[in-house]
Image (cartoon, rainbow, N blue to C red; front, side, top):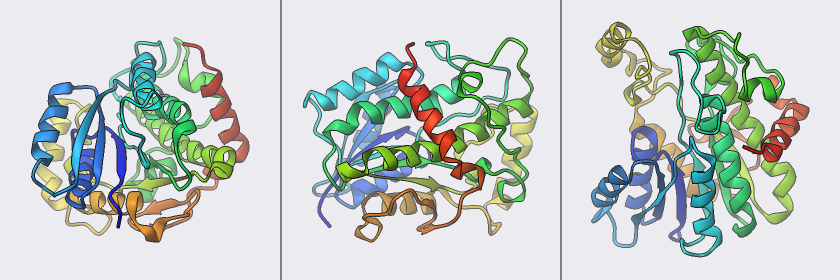
Length: 300
């Protein structure tokens, strides 16, 4: 396998970090798009010596700021940072404590999980070569129910209402979880539109479901009492068949990014290393089209 260049958002913690280090071990170069430069340097130091040809390059990128995202993309398009062969849109957050906004005034969950990755990919797609891959991080929360451990299902509506909820929108933790589910449904829509719009360029996009990973700090936005209880039962949760260790999901995500066996996969919803059917709602093409056009036209 030839060494490849993989740009990863959210590469300094959790799944992103584990995937970055796995790719470096396989002699690939990871371009870590990071909000915290110090953590980026720590990642590069940790990766040093893991392989003969692999390594980590660091690019500043705060996904909560579209100007920062565009500045990061311009480093690639200008040639100051080498062109990636793969873009992994991994970073994401969940807000369950009220409603928060990005510096651009966009609801924070949709701003980081969706809008920033749309902006990053759309501004870089012109420099990608045929065979380039884009991977969006999905989740079973996009369908809710038992497969998502009882997580509430998304409630899709007009993009304007999703990105700019009015003052009367619910600020409950349950509503925050629904916003997260909406954002994960949106990642599938983004993959659909990349394939529909740029297939002639030889670019493919897929969505990766990492499974339930209790080790990644899923509780970090929850009240202290809930965090304490959750962390006490993590050793039990990770032994359940539906749960995955971070290292296992990282290996699967790295495989999807660089494996020749996944070359040419288009608009797949991948769990582990196997495609599986996503929800019916995720296949509504008009929703995907409206989302992409809304993100493209957004002037903030």
